[in-house]
Amino acid sequence: MKKLFLLLLFAFSFGLTWAQGGSSEVHPTPHPYPEKFFHLNPRGSLNNSFLKFERGGEACVAFLGGSITEMRGWHNSLMEYFTTRFPKTKFRFVEAGIASMGSTPHAFRLVQDVLSKGKVDLLFFEAAVNDEGNEFSPLEQIRGVEGVVRHVWNNDPETDIILMHFINEFSPERAAQGQQPDAIFNHERVANHYAIPSINLEQEIGERILDGQLTWAEFGGVHPSPLGHQYYTATMVRLMETMWSRVKGGDTVSPHHIPTKQLDDYSYTDGEFIDIREAQLGQGWSLNPAWHPQDGVPTRQGFVDVPMLETTQSGAKLTLDFEGRAIGICCVAGPCAGILEYSIDRLPFKTLDTFIHWSGGLYIPWVYMFETELKSGIHKLTLRMSKDHNEKSTGTACQIRNFVVNRSKPE
Image 1 (cartoon, rainbow, N blue to C red):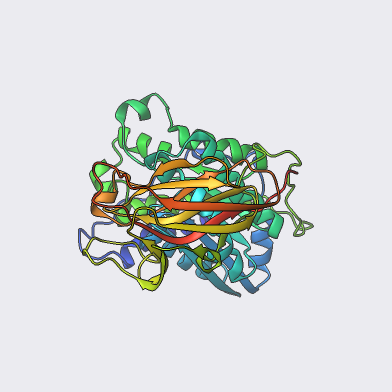
Image 2 (cartoon, rainbow, N blue to C red; image 1 turned 120 degrees about the vertical axis):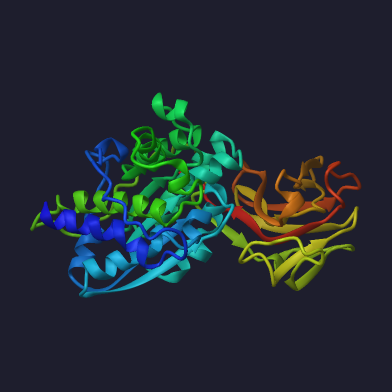
């Protein structure tokens, strides 16, 4: 217990070493840590990561999520924690946070941003805040989270996974009644089905505020202050230390059990990017090798000064041959975002308005799915720009970073 207390104290206080500005007041170590905030028994195992970290050598920890993962905070503290906790191990860290992205985008960028970096021993995964804020449907939330989990384990069943649910807003009524966002409920369905440890930080922070341990302003809101990140870090450390304390002398690294039955047959379990250069461009579309906006509107890291397919003309058309069961685009939806017309295999065209309520002030990264329940095989996507556009949009533009495809077959 003394060792666990010292580790928790380290995790909570470390954030002060990288905090810039603000008060230097050291808050007391959070107390207590009710186990109701994370599932410990019998939900899953973290044995593999502990055994690999303890024996030394090389190991990898990856962080997949949105802006709360991208910003300096909890994941930086955990990187320091791991290197201190396991001094014999040389850690490689994969920092794969991208602002604004939820579980569906994560499922399709998983290969490029995480799995392509090499073997992963422990994956931290969060998407509840953006899944709720971006208003992705419950079906998409299931398909995205299950897609990530199953893809990771199909790639390497020894990888340990921790799923976190960060707090999106503080509602006294919701916290007092023990309510949780639908996104957390849907993510928990996946965690339960695959026996993955999870941490409900939405519930923890809400109840701590009700208990008077801190205020919402002190915590820092959706994008936490250094203090807020310390709360997140300390709870993650407690989860790991508690589960690692169960490892026995005779335990060995073993594959996680992958249920035969998926929660949804069309989950994005084999999501990938398709390079935009594979499209056949008609008049009005062009490949910009280093796209950046001309209007001074902000962008997101990774979605500026990179190759983009772009059009600003109504009637512009392109086609793409692909193999898979779902097809969509990863694009930036900015002030001029237009209405796309799309057809699969020459069926009647459907329309999709790519302008969203953030588009007016940001080229926001977004994944739009055209069709998600196709038969396995070769298909053709035809995409053209409508002459119409959203009344709030200033044009008929589209900038495509990648096409996204789910190559999986029914299991």
